[in-house]
Image 1 (tube, protein in one colour):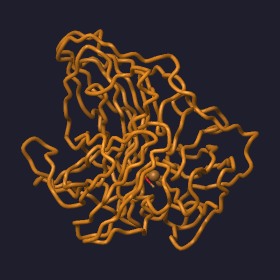
Image 2 (image 1 turned 135 degrees about the vertical axis):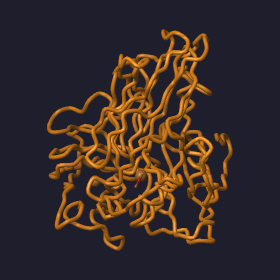
Image 3 (image 1 turned 90 degrees about the vertical axis):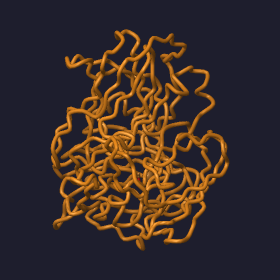
Length: 427
Ligand code: C2O
Ligand code: CU
Ligand code: CU
């Protein structure tokens, strides 16, 4: 449901149903009662406001993930919209275009709320992209990748006690539909991939027919917008919260060819899910779109420019997930950072599991992972980084735009809800 061009949006959080399986109703809680929520398409440089009315019976707070916003519009975990009340969020859209998402961020229950359906795409369209002639319009398709577990009556089951690896389902759900298929023409498409799963990691491939022959594709954007140059690949790993935009060219495939979006990631917390969705080549079409060799001019901060440094440890302490050994306390500031100072954070994961580290307010650059430069698709703008088990990664960034209190946390939502989160006072 694109809702392009408006300056003000009114969304209502309420219970509803979604047809995740054909002809079956699964209860959800969604924006306007639908799942996924309406896709908001904003334009770079043009602010919008979103009024969220809570017509549900629990507190909520809504965060726009990856967006540079004032603290009072960031969806802080205890900045509740109580049942029966509304809140106006202001989004400046003062940042490069990209694929973002809005979702619930309520203290201790984000996992259950997002799983229930409180997630939607927020796309910032950057007019500077128009000159690139990337696939657009009907050929630019957001795909929300999640996993769920269904009861016999089609209810989606959630168990918040699964905090070890985080909650894992056994069935892939893409844009709210189990094993969907998408008819495509013989041309290029841009897919905006969002790993919106509570805890599952995807390692995506595109397999032609039943054969397992990989269809190569290009990664053109990461969390915060376009990469400097496209990256050619046949596989792409995505942790929870991460986004990548890819371009897939179906031009050389015969009509009726089936292409499967497959997943080769093994999961520590649930059954493996080998496939997410299908594409079917349904018609011939010419293709006016291009993927230029240079996409964007990315600001990359240099280590030599760093004015501040800090360490963040990701670990399992005394039976729970922690950052710097602490449990999140919304009344405590864990780190004070200076607005405008180039800063390096060293993220040390001494647990055996991957943790997707996410920081609010800004996009960062990945300096290195275990001392090595990051893979090419991680050299652009990121706000969420999959830090592998027993690994150290360094990120570099500059807090910009707003001062105030902003959280950073693990984006495995059950870890976040178990307080694997801290907050930064930006002054
Ligand atoms: Cu996508 Cu702090 O969250
Ligand atoms: Cu966020
Ligand atoms: Cu974690």
